[in-house]
Length: 434
Image (cartoon, rainbow, N blue to C red; front, side, top):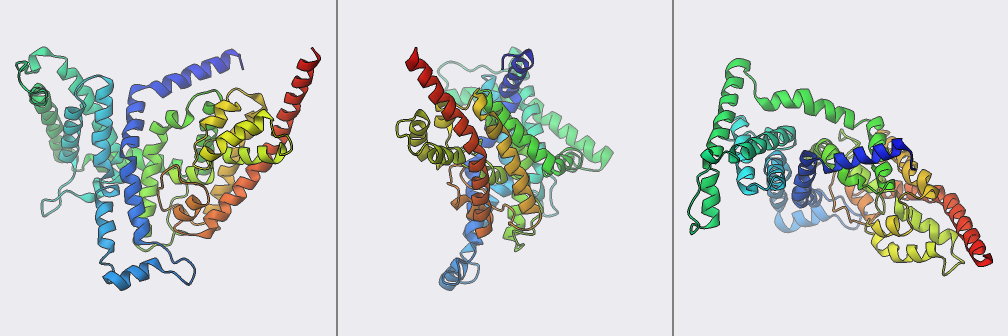
């Protein structure tokens, strides 16, 4: 644990986790997550599957409001959330990046949105092409938000370009005038870039970025090796006391959220959840691997109650009793830090490699058609069983896969808990003897 390699690894991981642009991307996605969940739930309600033969929610609603009329509500929610994902990200990332530089976040976000819209192709009737406002424009939104914010920060540092108003002028007015010249310069540069792309290349930047960067990354991200790497790195970082989910968030969310968006869109259009194209999405990990939180720690809690059921005051059991209520809602800091798992060699193997095994099992189950693929985004605190049913479009097979994965993870944890209990009891005997 004290080797130079491990120390270097922790240092590098810490730097990555604190890297300004990755943090801004991560926080930008976190900021719009309520909207993503709202759009996903709206689609889920619009297409809620029959519950057995007794209750058909869609049929019941059609009987009250007429065929499809009530679904217009969910459709408009989708239009304001998932359908404009790239636009939302363009603002939220720019805002967070500007705040990290302690410059005007609102102005940076607005300039980023304006720049993004300038690059969006226009339809024949002078409307914005929705095809590039959503997930397909996501990487353009990320790039535009970073570049425009960096330019804004640079230009705002030039006193000659900043209009300074008297102190009695309201703060909002003062900030808007201060950003005037930087905004004009940035928008002029974006307009020049768009004109050159159209005149010289005859294509728009969205097509170039999507074909060159976004599409290949999504293809790699949907593979089993990539999913295994994500699961491994997440838990390796957690084991060393680093927030693996946050550190990797800025890298994986731009890849996996668009895959989910396409699954949801196709499912809403009538495609079966078995037939949607993508296997590995953010809910794939949240639902089938991170049950109870990173490390599948809900299984760890169950295993503790099984192994130390006869030792009422054992510290493992006491920690498990305190951590269980939060663990049901995928909050596992009490057990990770209280047991502890961090830097505890006893739990190294099941905590890091157990989720990798569950990733393989889940990938095989979804890729072979045993279990439907994910078509909904839920709050990460949704308890297992409920989440397995909902993210697969209302399939009991999603629940069955969660039960199988939990069982396997419990069986993996049990021998290591038994070893930990023996070591603890031996230490207690030695302490009493001394």
